[in-house]
Image (cartoon, rainbow, N blue to C red):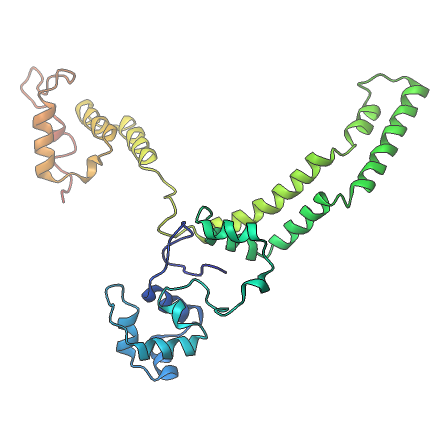
Length: 294
């Protein structure tokens, strides 16, 4: 994996882990407690805890060297100078990359973290194999042979029985012929879709991932609840009014509620809050007076 943090950072472009985050991720990956790490490295538990704290910056060079040695990574990786964790000294020519690929990776125009996760996904090799079959036209002859046989069988049926274009058997022989581009596009899309779905699920809890429920959806839900409220008419109007603003009616304090009622009484769109007997029809006397306030 090019990005292993389960906590934050996601796979956003240009997002880099801090030294503190890298240290915690490495410990969590190995399922070690601070006590166990202290025993293994000879560093104190309290110091190790501080090193993983977001607001702690003063990590000694000795501790960096010891932790890098223990985890099998470079000190440059721990200090955030490189993203290469396990292969710090790999020569560029060993990667067998073209000049164009190197230029693209260095350009900063790609989300290299996401690209790494896609390439290292267990399904990526299948995607490349299917892509190679299509690009190198490896299956073309077999597909063409099958289509030729189906077309010939269809032509023989038409000439012998003249069943018409909409005959079930004739139509079956026609639709059974494989359109090569469409078929391999479907195969490739399936391969890549499965890869992206796994990566999407893996980063569902990242801070850079959008929330499942949008504020607009929450406001719509509140509005629907307000409109179906079975209380007094005035309280229902108050609920609808607040729901349109995305405010939870039941979350109001007593002071906020009193202020709201005073404002709503001025509205020409609401009926008079008092009936002919002088009793208040205000929402304040219908459900709100007995509810528990914060």
